[in-house]
Length: 163
Image (cartoon, rainbow, N blue to C red; front, side, top):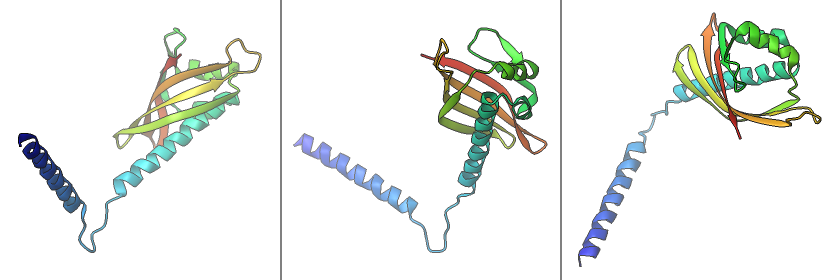
């Protein structure tokens, strides 16, 4: 008899929780769902995803000016090459030596930190020329983007090699 009482108690509790969730989710006529935060977050993600893609396109196409324009003046980067932190000037000069043929972004997320700062994370697979010693490279990337004078600029870049 005890197992039956225990099961019926659990069933009643679950039914009660389900009823409470439905009641909490119900809206009275004329009530509108608030979507401003979601649409603001969506717009921010679209802006920063576009900037990340533009950044990699500029690197791929060896366009130093476009790449430089996306970086904050106090930009700093740490790559997986064991060369330590680099400033904007060093990062921009690396564009001339780019051998990136293509790139594939995956799982980009944007986490707002404030009205003028966001953390962007993603995985990227870099594709190199067919005759290159290393053909593909996957890295996990974390970037901090800041809004300065109305424009989003990348302030910090960190990558970690994925095997």
